[in-house]
Amino acid sequence: MATKNPAFDAYIAKAQPFAQPILRKLRTLVHKAVPGVTEELKWSTPHFTYKGMFCGMAAFKAHCIFGFWKSGLLPKIGLRNGGAPLGAFRSKITSIDDLPSDASILKLLKAAKRLNDDGVELPKRKVKPVRDRVVTVPPAFMKAIKANKKAHAAFAKFPYSHKKEYVQWITEAKRPETRDRRVAQAIEWMAEGKSRNWKYENC
Image (cartoon, rainbow, N blue to C red; front, side, top):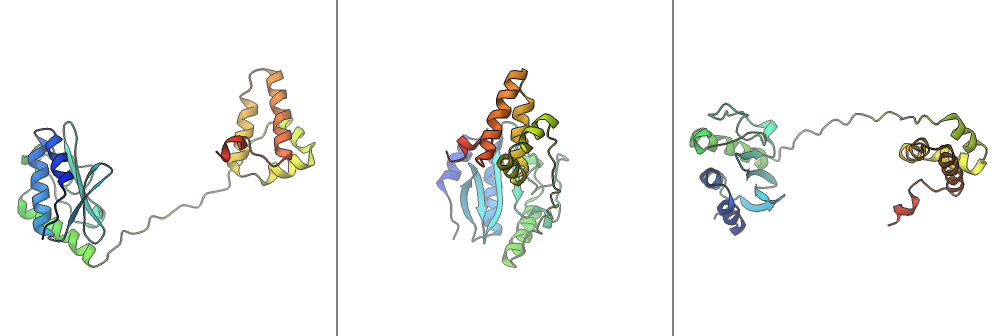
């Protein structure tokens, strides 16, 4: 039995007039192809779930979108307006006439259903290893750090972000006296093992 969410009705009612028939038609076809689908608002827009994330739609001022969570694994069906294929969240549907035939949409929905029925997962994105990043420390600042053993030891152990914050703070000083004052403060904090923004880290 179809599970309808009243929030969907409210969303469609508030959409632009051109968008309402598009959203209603897509909603009807989703339920026709996938009887066990449920409706949920996610990111403030209508989404359908079926054994996990399935598809979603949204309406904007001049277009609608309708996309699948696993769109990369599905066949491409072009819109009649020549835009991005149906099922990709970048597709822009500006009229109900932009949609392909009901049969084509149902075929796409059933293909997406099979992916979730079979437990097919999206391929994991390859994460490129992050190379060690190096902070260029002004010579005068580095000299002051090395002059204090505790500060030097702490600075050496700091992650890239902490080192960068200290260097930016020193180099952004416009007046020599401001820079000298900041260097002295930085050395004091480093000797205590504190980062530049230590006051805010526990807030």
